[in-house]
Image (tube, rainbow, N blue to C red; front, side):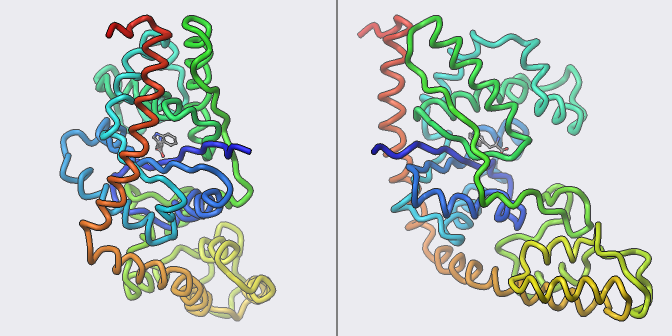
Length: 334
Ligand code: TRP
């Protein structure tokens, strides 16, 4: 049986962090065993809100590629490619723009939220405004069946499905309707070091996969716990306590974690102790990743070669899809 095609990707705006690991990288390592997986480094999308700092995006492409390889996304099992090197995606975007209204883009919840976050009003760059259409092109050019996503990306898939339906209705049955996939391994959102809802590079509350051991320790020791837990003997709160939220995810000995929670609630268990415990768990997880990352980083040309091969394979698919699209749209002149 033909394996289903899965597309995932990240905007290269910096190195990947533990939130990416929990939210999507773990899934990709599993999905590459069962699906035909493409992993896109979305530099075109990154440029929609970073076009004034291309050097940052360029450096981040390398960082993200290293993170992928370090965590075990295997180029013999997954195809890693760079978005901007597939010009057919840009071509498709132009044709899809005919099928979408400005009003519909304004209603896209993810875009709405980002307009608010970035303080854009009517001064929003057109490229940023229409990035969901560009993302629809990303998703469809490979005849993607499944897109693993978190909740924030669901509106993008909804909008893609609308475009696909409209295209197929107008021009014939060419495009594949993608489905969102919330995979079983998805552990959900990881809070930041400050206990805030989400770990994010921009919030300065992230543990990066590339962090050195001492940096990691420093970050763990600075984590938010219970602000009312002033003395070791005081009873402490486990809920909304970032250290325990992390231990729920990364603690390998669940019984030990439950015991610590009880002790903490009772009083008599200090923050330093629980942080040291968490630090040990995270070092155990991240040390092999950090070591592999360093090995790959020693040979940047070899890394680029892997990405180049993935991109060439992806491009062949893009060209085939584009030929069918052109024929359906009656613009296959010669
Ligand atoms: N928008 C995604 C993010 O911010 C990145 C992305 C771009 C993507 N194109 C995609 C993800 C296509 C899945 C499929 O994380």
